[in-house]
Amino acid sequence: MCLLKQPFNFGIGAEEIRFVCLVLAPIKHTKHTKSALEVARTYSTLFADDRLRRNLLNTHSPEEFAHEFELECSRIQIEHQKRMNRMNAMPTSLKSREYSSQNLPEVKEERERFVP
Image (cartoon, rainbow, N blue to C red; front, side):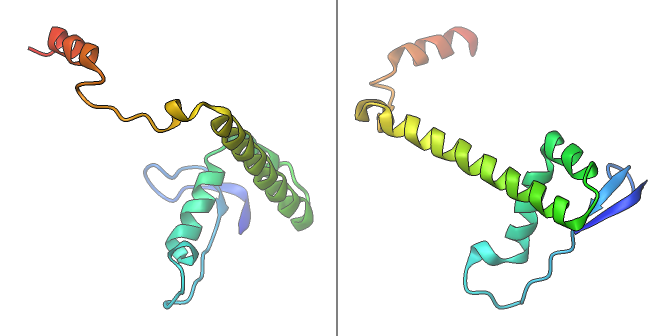
């Protein structure tokens, strides 16, 4: 992971780049989740958050940088756990409801009103 001192222009759609992440992984891997592509996707998901990027730009040492990543991962884990708790608290009938045209005739009627 690299934080550039000045924004760099890598071309159309990649102007003002401040963070560069190089992902190295062996060609043979045991799990799909450990592939270079999956690791790169994980980092891109993390960097999609403006707040995280802003916090990382304000760090002054590699330790602070790593700490911000740890905080973000903890925050995501807590949000995920809250979602799972809410989902588990839902009645089973709402969690695994089967939808078909028989169960939702009003959707079919509504669609016919708007689709010629």
